[in-house]
Length: 124
Image 1 (cartoon, helix red, strand yellow):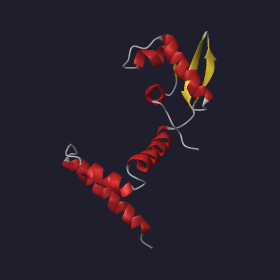
Image 2: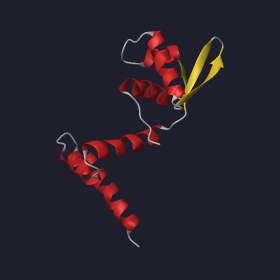
Image 3: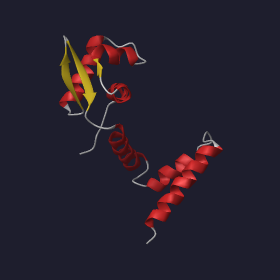
């Protein structure tokens, strides 16, 4: 089953991934937007209903922690992006990436190294 987040859910998940766990107040404090406490709580409850976070009691507050790893969410989002934007072609995505004029020479060298390693892995 693909992992899918709204933009707001992704903002909250990013805080949880970085922090490991957080209360509603801690999440709210770390978000760049000035959201109401109840809004952050609603997003966390929605994420919990979807099975992406869990909570434990901590005094009067709840401490939320992610149940899905950032890497798994990234893989799922990338698959969706390739399918929806690049017509299912990872090659088109890679072409777009390396055509980006904002990539530094060092970033391009790292991409080339990753591709070379991947090709070596596939050789019998």
